[in-house]
Amino acid sequence: MALPVAAETRQPVNPVHVSASASDVSAAQPVRKMTRAEKRALAKAQAEAEQARVELKASVKRASMLKPVRGRIWCVPFAREASGIQLKGNAGTWWGKAAGIYNRSRLPQVGAVMNFASSRKMPMGHVAVVSNILDSRRIQIDHANWVRNKVTLDQTVIDVSDANDWSQVRVVNADGSLGRVNPVLGFISN
Image 1 (cartoon, rainbow, N blue to C red):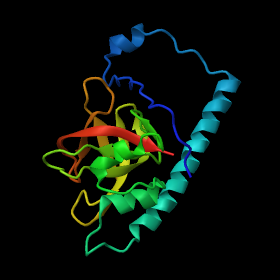
Image 2: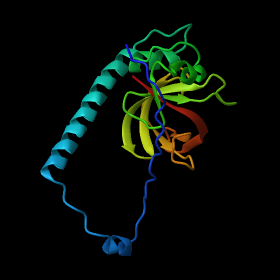
Image 3: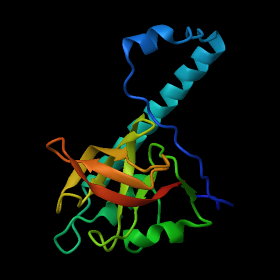
């Protein structure tokens, strides 16, 4: 059971600088070597992240085997089973229902539920589970019924918000193209 959380966590995500010219790289300051303590801390954090991903994938496997409700696979029961977040109702209501019960954040973390806001294209909202953090602007999610009546694993999502706060995202389609801009309320976690 999750402990109540007093307040939301709102921290901006730093932008990713994708390109640099050769002159930029040569003019850059030398990179400081990591200390042994920093290397150990990094290795520990990487091991913990990998363990969290392994545990999540076991939950996702169980969630993928859920029996369809009235012949349909829905995002809410899938996300509930995969994440352990025990909220009910349409996905668009989860953010409000999570207040004071679960941690709500603007930062993704493996195992957290990404709560898409209700919109004209998604009147009931949508929920997905963060399966991997690729960098500060790209994550992967596992979710159900994004593609009608199917479970989709490790689908890439890109933060396209001006404030780098994950309030607007685009989901990468199977063919590699970017889908429409979708509003996101944030991430819900235990």
